Length: 171
Image (cartoon, rainbow, N blue to C red; front, side):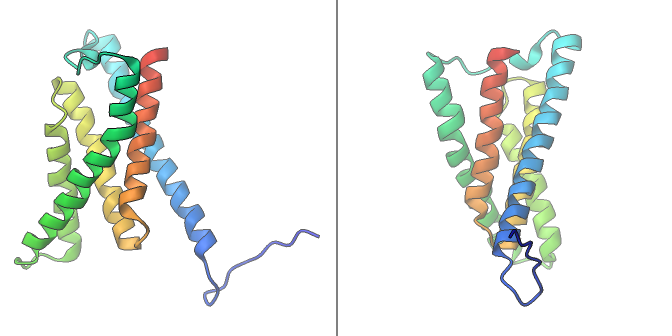
């Protein structure tokens, strides 16, 4: 007979939390994709396709897949979330800023940095700012939850980049 188990405060909620975190990851990816689709729509119908202009020239589809889907999420997350967060936290500890204020400033400043590294054109940079904002917010959320912040943000970034890689070929 199938039994449904309800957790109490005293019981281990690990399974529940993992499911909660997976939902959070999927929600962030869906929001990121939705924002990017809005930018893509504006680009295609109002801005003469600027979003696809001046982007990085790839030699092959395999090279692009490796760099964008497999490599970039790991490197960018390490540089733009882990390293930046740790550096920012170190400097912020010398101020009177509260932890929440530090996190808000980190999300904002690191999002600007993320956008600044994606300057193929102005619309791509704006889209990258929002993407960076979601990634940075996710990093602070999972850092606070103590649930593998690096790996979860890499997962979000990888899923988003995979969607973009596929969308580029079918749209």
